[in-house]
Length: 205
Image 1: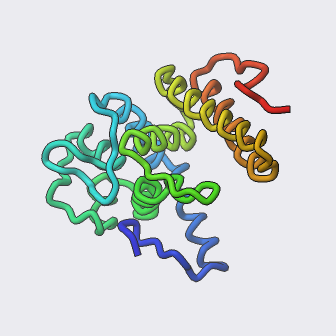
Image 2: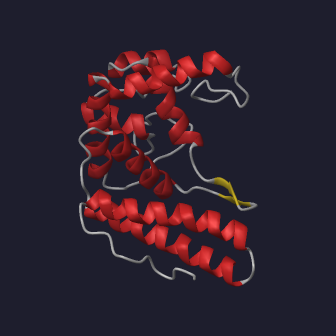
């Protein structure tokens, strides 16, 4: 169990299909899109671009993605139990499914285990990932060159790492990593609304 209420091994089947449908509907709806657009603006306006896991909104400092939106809207969630998504959703006027989904993405959507190595996500990394998530889910994505530069640099580093792996003989794993990195690298430029270079850095032949 987690703050989102999601479990590691759900019931699956039709119940899972219905739940994912409820999440998709909540994201597409007017209230969901209003929240996601507010999230883009709130995250961009943060003086310290960091998001934290397992918190909602502290009196000063740490917030999660949904807590950042609440703070920007002038909604006080400091006394709300982070493990009560039904209360959070009511305060923010969104579907409970969306409140749970954002809590899950914020707390547990990070890289975790990658190619046999556990990567600890920093608050700054979490901010960047959730900013990209909000951009991806919005019907009216807010371009941001600063964020695109962050994403491009991060993806370029991943491409270099994948190229190094290829050179030392980890062909299968490097191709998988390189494919993911290429996709993220191109998305960074699309996000900023600029032309995508023909070739990513250090593409191994």
